[in-house]
Length: 365
Ligand SMILES: NC(=O)C1=CN([C@@H]2O[C@H](COP(=O)(O)OP(=O)(O)OC[C@H]3O[C@@H](n4cnc5c(N)ncnc54)[C@H](O)[C@@H]3O)[C@@H](O)[C@H]2O)C=CC1
Ligand SMILES: O=C(O)C(=O)Cc1ccc(O)cc1
Image (cartoon, rainbow, N blue to C red):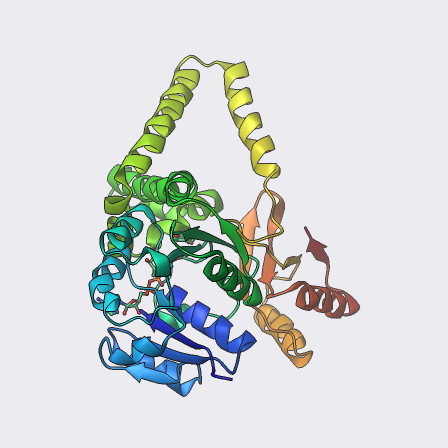
């Protein structure tokens, strides 16, 4: 039987992560990739992720059963004209872009709808580049599919199966539904995070006290302000109507909050914070979706040199990989604790057991 061949145009955070997940679950699949920076392709070939590296948009893409467009949303669209003459009839052409309406319009214009199923893994980070990609980035994440009207059921079910087989959760939406939903839960938050950071920069004095003191809460809600400016510029340019619509609603809520504060409306303020707390607490944290499942433990440590290294050594001696480690200061843990993130539940359980055995005080939440 012929091997399945999968092409990638753009091999950064998302392209790299999907390629790595495909190689992990389907080591026999052949991967062809083109990326603007050649070193990325060299790294991916060296790691055994990419089998055929292309110097340019190469006619080898005609071999592909699937082609993933994984560059920025504008470039994904730019590639279509070239691909139109190259893809084979049964090829499933897809993208991972954060906006779907524009690419669907172009696909229809170019009469490529029978081959196109839009895709969008709802996972990622503020980092860019292949170096940050990983085979588990999209694990348990919703992976939205927006099939063109002309895409056959066979293609849709084949693509859904591929998505499930690499550990993600396929969900089918129309491009319009997708762009409205992501405007609210992804695009607006990036605009808000960026505006909050710009606000503090504007208000801070020359001694930068605001910047120095900015603590957990501010950093939590502004992490995504460190994302790629070009990527987010392009996303805003492709989904302006939906972003503007949800922004209008957001501005209304901000004006309302200001009014409650100006009026010292204690009931209104309590209502505002309690309704957001209740709704936020009702979010499902078990599939990563926009909120990643965490496998974290919190550990009291004494403030002395080598304390973190000792814990890291205990875990590594027991074959437990750490995803992230750092001191956390917040009200819940007055003294500060060490927060350690793991890749999965098994590692979390094993780590708790090992550390408890050595009399560390562990909190799991
Ligand atoms: N960053 C994130 O968390 C998420 C991003 N997305 C979408 O995924 C797409 C890619 O984003 P990332 O992987 O984060 O970006 P990235 O910057 O890590 O990767 C993009 C890759 O495409 C390559 N590229 C860009 N322009 C090119 C061109 N003209 N020719 C050839 N290669 C080119 C770059 O060299 C880079 O390797 C975007 O469309 C974004 O909307 C979707 C879900 C999450
Ligand atoms: O870093 C985060 O939390 C993100 O929000 C990542 C992200 C960026 C773009 C997307 O289209 C989807 C997810």
